[in-house]
Image (cartoon, rainbow, N blue to C red; front, side, top):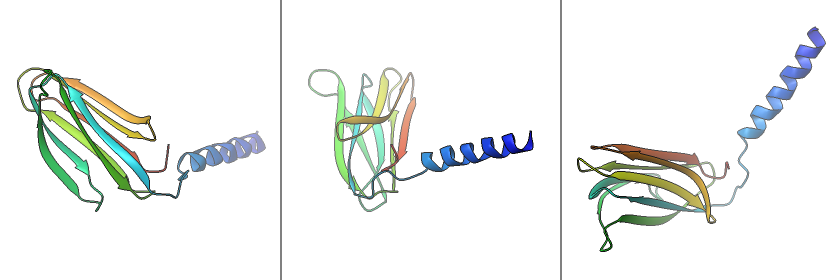
Length: 124
């Protein structure tokens, strides 16, 4: 029984270690995207200098919210995007992409709701 537990522990350790491994050492183009039906939203995201940028986005001419920003982040850095509905109705959806692949997404709706997504660059 004890040897079986040691084998199981070793397998779990390998699986956990593998899930924490950076799969790419190269800097990645990260696309931050905010969409929704809220009239306006407050957006914050990790910028290329490892700081945070903050801005406000509103409805586009077609009556929907769409904002997008591409940054280059080194492997191992934290990509973070949040959007808060700045009105009493509507929804916000945040999406983090790389290479056309959706890495993380979150959505929230209602009065002053917040949607947040984050991922470590290179760990997908």
